[in-house]
Image 1 (spheres, helix red, strand yellow):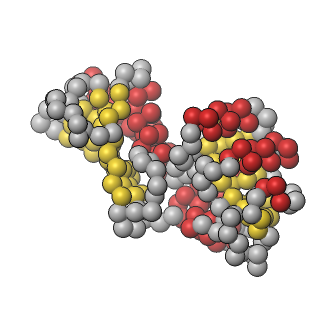
Image 2: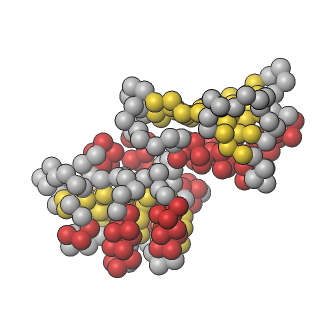
Image 3: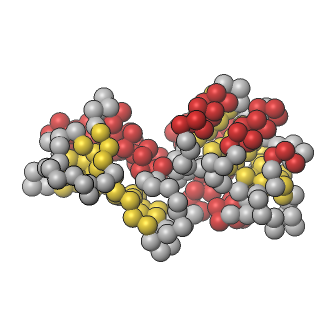
Length: 251
């Protein structure tokens, strides 16, 4: 059985993960980390990793980039892996995560959905065919009005996947408000919308001469992200140090 420490356990995603773990006999949440308490009836909750004295196999992080160093230090001291589902890390945070992956296994994904991770492959293949045929590429992402970072980590991952397939020749454009010029050839536009309770929607548009191809993924529930995180935790629990992603999980 895989024992999990859930960072951000009292948040919206933490609640979904907690519910789904209860339905899976192969995993258990040994403890939670959150700045607000409220779930000690299910498992012990600590304000910080410094207070946590519970043994576990892996950490699932569904919180924020704040105090990421504390989590990494805890994992390295205990020799346990981390499934990082949080986005919006600074360059310094990303370097810390990379360094930590040399000592413990870390799986990081901008989106834990299996559908999105399949999409990352599809957009790359489409770009390899369509870009040289003169198609312009745009990404539109939509999320709920409480999401603080923009563009989403998933939108950036999709853009990076496309750019990687095309020898990184594209430049990302996030705002055309002050641009008074036609769209240039190697421009990849990324637009963000925030409103209501939209769980997550990502659309990739390949616009050519007289034809348009659209690839779209819509998340109707946060359960898809929780399910992916739990699968990732099971996968990571016995892996050696290194950096992993959801492609390693889904094969």
